[in-house]
Length: 247
Image (cartoon, rainbow, N blue to C red; front, side):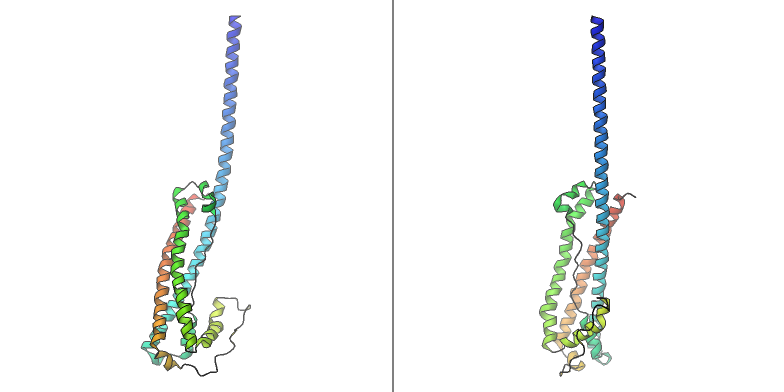
C-alpha cells in the first residue's frame, strides 16, 4: 500500500509539474504574442510620425524660403533709398507686394494627449514629442508679431498713401504663380490705379515707408532664425525615428 501511495504521489507531482510547465509556456506564448502586437503598433506610430515630420519639414522649408524672398526684396527696396537713380516704381511695387506674413502650421497628432506615446520604448523620443508643441509655439509667437505689424502698420500705411491697389496689382500679376495654380485664379486687380498716386520720388523721400520696410526686414530675419532652430529639432526627431523604425 505504501509503495502504491508513493507512486501515486510521484505521479500527481509529475502531473502538477506538467500542468505548471504548460501554463508557463502558454503565458510565455501569450506574452510574446502581446509584445509582437505592441511592436507592430509601435512601428505603425513611428512610421506615421516619420511621415508627419517629413511633411512638417517640407512646409517649414517653404516658409523659410518665402521669408528669405521677403528679406531679399526688403534689401532691394532699401538699396533704392541709397541709390534712387536705380529705382523703378513698378519694381518698388512688386517688392512691396512680397512683404506678406507667412505662418508655420504643422501637422499635430494627439499621441501625447491620448497617452498613445507610452507605446514608444525610446524615452528620448517621447520627451522630444512632448516638447514639440512648445517648440512650435515659440516660432508661431514671433510669426504673430510680424503678422500684427504688417496688418496694423505696413498695410494701413500703404493704403493711407494710396499705393495699396498698385501693390495688389503686382502681387496678383507676378507673385501669384508661386503661390496658387495659375489656372485657378486670374489677376483680381485688372489694372493699376488711374488716380493720382505717389511717384517714385515721393516714395523714396518717405522716411516712414523706409522705416516700415527696414522693420519688416528685421522681423523676417528674426522669424527665420527661430525657424532654423525648429528645423534642427525636426531633423533630429527624424534621425531618432530612423533608428527606431525597422525595415
